[in-house]
Image (cartoon, rainbow, N blue to C red; front, side):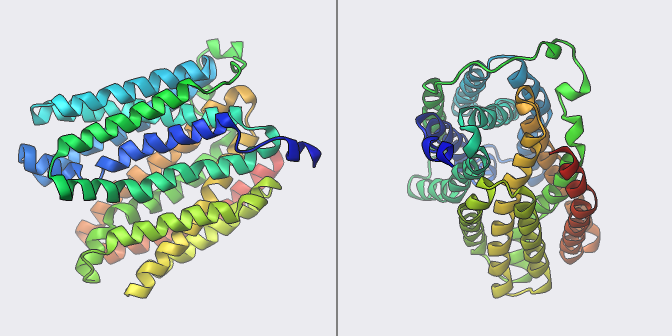
Length: 393
């Protein structure tokens, strides 16, 4: 108990890592809701072309993450982080100078690489700078920084565009935010991580943490559900509920739920109740997804935002702590990249299959499929994931 009192959670290095994560996601979310409009107005791009251009970012981030986990575990982590953040910062200049749709598409696609690598490197750095007695709760609070960014950055971006009508200002704002994160990470004072010499031999477990396969598979199901909800929420609300301005409020409420759940779940994480937090999150999310489609009204719509936010805020840090807890110190980067890649894979699959289901069977069928997929993930957690984790922890 005395160790916990002496070891500070909010130490200077952890604060810098948190600030870096905030700027990374702030610069990303500042542009996210406006890029389709930018491509349409500036280059007269069609809807399918816009989808192709913007999907490249996610695809490259997904491909890079397993390799970035290997790099973070095989080389000095701070050096890897600074290099990734520098590339992320520099590519924003490409947005400013791009004079054609092709050039912009190239820069946007390439940008996914340093973004995906930076998220792995910085989240691993957070683990390194946390005292071991505060690690579980520190990882739980770490996500608050990108929750805050996702809550406020889109609104700020839309406000600036409404006032100025100038996309270049937004690109410069994102560049400056990314630059502040780069400077902050430079001043992180961390000991060089121990590098395992076995990493000289390339094998599957250098890119994917094989012993955490059940956690990775489980998170694919939940990422699938989030991919459907987040991408088809606006059009469903407009066409079925007649809500033309509710999407922003939905995500604001959801973000508030994410932040609140991390604060509420802090004590439980600190005491090591990872499975308990995961169960709470899974059941809350399940209720939120079910209410979303089963109760098609304004009350059901916003209640689902609260429950999905609270659920994901409990579930995500629990899963991340679970995979970190079964990893060796030289596998932290691989563990982080495994869980992030699994989420991205599930999310991308949800976007792809959700669109196909909606096209042929309608949005109701698509959202019921989302609920069914979450149910399968819930059963998998109790039958496989919980049992396997308790054997390995």
